[in-house]
Image (cartoon, rainbow, N blue to C red; front, side):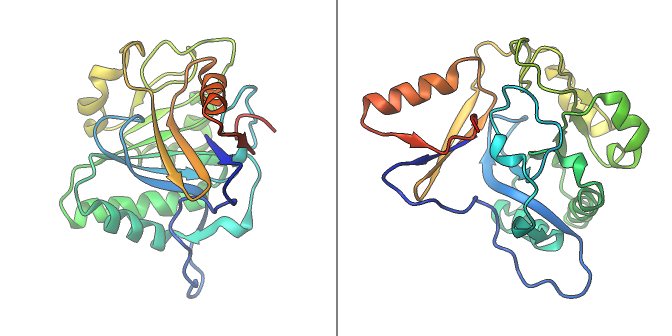
Length: 242
């Protein structure tokens, strides 16, 4: 979720800056990346939000991630290098969201391959969690190779009329599915954990841009706008409206 402060200029997403691609390298469209993220999975995590989503769930709070944007393509190798540099081996996990990660399957595959190589080479134990608006059965049918590279997935489309009931999920129909031995060990305590009482949101400011990270409850974003207005701050270009 994002919003632009009226007093500030529009800023680019908080993603690593692209480098010049050498040869034919995998490119991923990235809306933003952030470290640390503490509200989308256990521990301190790297968050990566891809650009582009063909699902367009009603009530989505990240509508700025819907359009595909070739201008936001970055080499996957550079993104993996950024993850290594920013976390310095201390990340508990990586959360991939969007946008719809599975709308870029080849690039997602390359990214997951790079993360797995980094984890193996450095003998790290971070987990990889991915969100998707596609039903689990479709992912299992069309993207089994990608699921095999993940430790857990939160699938199913966001349904605005079904308030969140469980931790890290935006609507009651969404499930948390461990996919690996690491995922089963790490996520078993959270599969059915209620959302109530948990920290849901964190904020980051980048120039005139405000990023809100996490899973808001119904009405939270309207309350954010109202609180900002009370303090003389007008939010424009908000991601939860088009």
